[in-house]
Image (cartoon, rainbow, N blue to C red):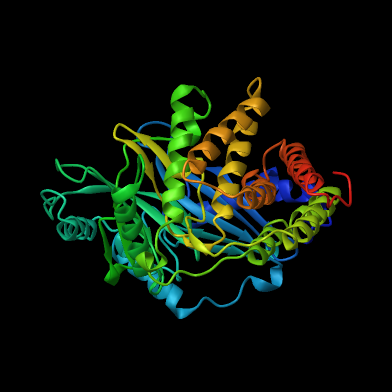
Length: 476
């Protein structure tokens, strides 16, 4: 086995899993990380939690790096590792990268590392350690304990939500998401203040943060007026100089966890979500400024792009996905359209939190103007995902009942049959997207789970097509 075959896809799933989990690549990774440490003797270990494969181009993995002996004193640091064709590695480092590393060292944020980037050109491997990211240079100061107190005090003063924490309050800083070049989320825990116990920071580039803040605030206002039992997480402030939105903590549990033990309370939650979504779909577009638009063609394109790694790893399933997308296009062309409305864009059980005060909706970065059926379909698909993941007795019937409760809550204010048909079409498509994105490449049952879920999406679509008299093939 070699890295070139793994990247090209010619070695199949075994090649990708070897690169991520094999003893030789793992030993090389740990050796390179040790070489970056001030003290190479410091014990280290890596916990892999996410991987993304682009056939022929790149394999990316995200780890939590544990430093020191096991126990309370052990530290953790997120890292990103990429494998590319060796010709892309070993180029001279950009001057900006060296300057950023020096700044991190000056602020004392590099310890216990000498450098935060390393390369093994022969393997096409590059290692990057938080808080280094040329695309988000503000991550450095937002990870600096000396900068954070004043930042949070400013945010609470802007929001005017009770007494602001003292600027000299100290915080522990925990990276929640470290994805260089893409996105970052940090958690701040106050150590010596009665206010602002936990605050979250979400980083943005350009003016996208200002837009996201406006959307989140407007949605919170709208649901406060008529959310029908659901509120939205209101951001504290957008700090333009740092390109960051600060949020208070939501105290509760995500609905995705509660779906493990469904009951009467879950049924009511699902009806509330449906009713609140109906209210969101009636929000005036001017309420949230100039949103981007999303359409069926863009969704199909996004699914095809997300599924490109399936073809070399599971060719038969890749062909099945192509057929699903083609069948979906044919059906969608025959369905009537509706005017675009405000859409959340990423409505899922992880984004609905059950709190002592009711349900709270979070994460508005994906909001756009779109067919309202896309929100319905995405939540229906997400219920399919969680009921399949928990694999409890009667899961299929339980999922159908949960979906019925959600749709009943939505339909309380009326829903056309055409909209539910398009929602069911999106359900099948989004289940494909969720499968290729969420099932982890390094899990032993990746092939079996992926095959099973794609077959389920195929069957959902086939039944929908058959009901509309447009069936041209049986489900694979």
